[in-house]
Amino acid sequence: ELLQHFPHATEAQVERLALAHRAAEESGLDIAGLFVDLGQDARAQAWRDDGLLPPSRPEGGAGNGSGPFYSFARRRPLIGQEELLCHGFPVWRLNFQGMADDQCMQLASGAMPVTVVGATMSAVLAVCDFAGQSGEVG
Image (cartoon, rainbow, N blue to C red; front, side, top):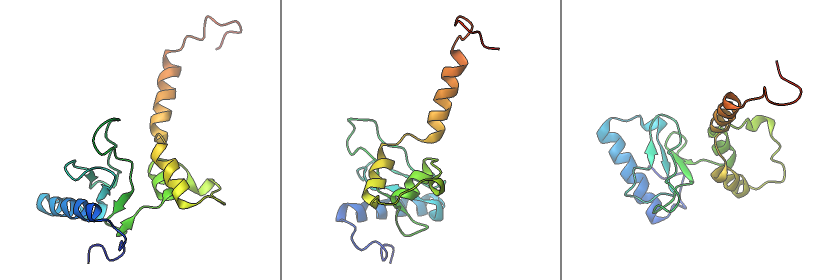
């Protein structure tokens, strides 16, 4: 019943989902907000119940996570545009015409969250010294 909307799941994905669901129930986690990274191996705790996507494992680690991400609330893996939205991209303002979902998924798996880019830009601007430039600011 758990996977009725995900009939094409592999045996490994079914194992990951069952493990995450069992652990969430035993720990009293919010099943409706549970996301599981199906790209990580079953031994990694590759799920979160706070509505955020689980973090990817560091490069070189076994079973690098990059999705697909399964949503227990939707009872299916997220589509590419949903993953981009979870990374903070304003998908309602982007034109996806002519893009297949697997292309969106590939884009989402390699994308840095918008909040991280914004924080990095803010940090760089905070430490830059613009006073030494010709045409002083301010």
